[in-house]
Image 1 (cartoon, rainbow over the protein chains, first blue to last red):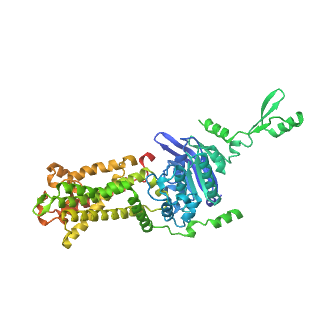
Image 2 (cartoon, chains in turn green, cyan):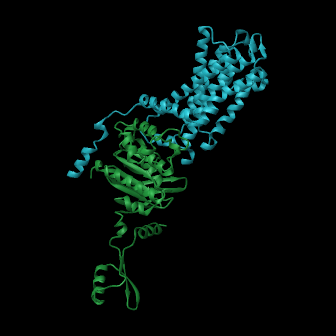
Image 3 (tube, one colour):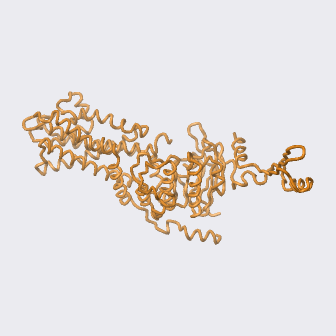
Length: 284
Length: 286
């Protein structure tokens, strides 16, 4: 695999704060054009790992390559190729308008997007003339995204972007992320909302105690697609549940035995939440 | 490479081949300066405490004490005007930068700028432009108040204009660097104004801004002489007061050489402090 097809490559990453090991031998690869969700409980090392990839923190050891460069000594040209939505990007007290800020940031980049189109993209056209500090939490987050994508980044980092959103605002925000992904950007998203990872990510990496405990598509993470299923149905003598690796066969047998109709039949695989809880629990 | 990847590569050429030019410090700095000025003017606290307060205090102090004679042909109002000009420069340079940068750091504004290709020089050039505009406007405002209320005379000779120019430049640069350095002291944006203003208000009392320097006890005069404000106000008195007012100075003359020396020493020290302590992230952010 050539470096140009890989947006992020992390091997054996370690970082500790005093005696606390935040990241402990993390490995991760993100392909270009991919949306990868880094999932993990609070304190799992998500933000530390991402800030190392963003060039905001120095690592203790390990190899990190982001868009072909080591973030620790990458320059302004590299910065122009990545977009960062910080966890605490807030503009309380900022007296500038949305339009003024997005136009301003566009001027930092060599090939910016049209600022007004970006404002439209994040759904702030009606608020373009409003001062940044007057925006709601969700709107400020959209402004953060506008500021980080106006430079046409190849890679976008989003650190827990929807924390504190109501369900509707979260769904609108997801739509925005999907549009950016459809535009061809590589996206690394950290979140502790499972449904967010499931809704947006091509692949999910579960981070627990500073290591990637599992990585894969949300539907097949940690063998989820092939794990034993629970088949449950209403038998004449009460409800019965059987765990089986071949639910199709069991259902066919049931249909034959019960003469076609199987009352109350359900077949369930472990949910992403089941798999996730097991992964972070197992590593404790 | 598959056809799909090829098509993707076509719509997303690497920036290096599309346009190798990153906007530089001048372009980004001028754009930032423009918005910094707009932001400053829209911020009510900044306009009230940093910009308007020195003029309000000058009118107030002048109304109370202004028409007493400080010396032959010199009124206390004129003394206050020259001193308040030094105080005003400190306000729009030291206070303004100290509070605004501390707030920007605490709220993550600096960190986000650091995440962009904006050159650090572009950020600081923007600050320089804003501070310069506010400081020139401040001095013009105070001169106007002095002329209207206290018969202040504009400098009459080229030599005095020259003194005015170098005291203004050295004083502004020294105060700005100290403001940038002091921006690291407040722990959060909530405490920024208090932490930055507290020592400065005390310094103004002992440096001949709020109280004529001759009325300050000798030991406090010596404390004030460590800091730039006392020297700025002395330099500005030498520009705006008649020659005989020199007799009111502790040295009995205008010490231009020492004024320049002390201000330049603070510029050197302030620069070292800024270069060694400036941070883009708040301390709470690791």
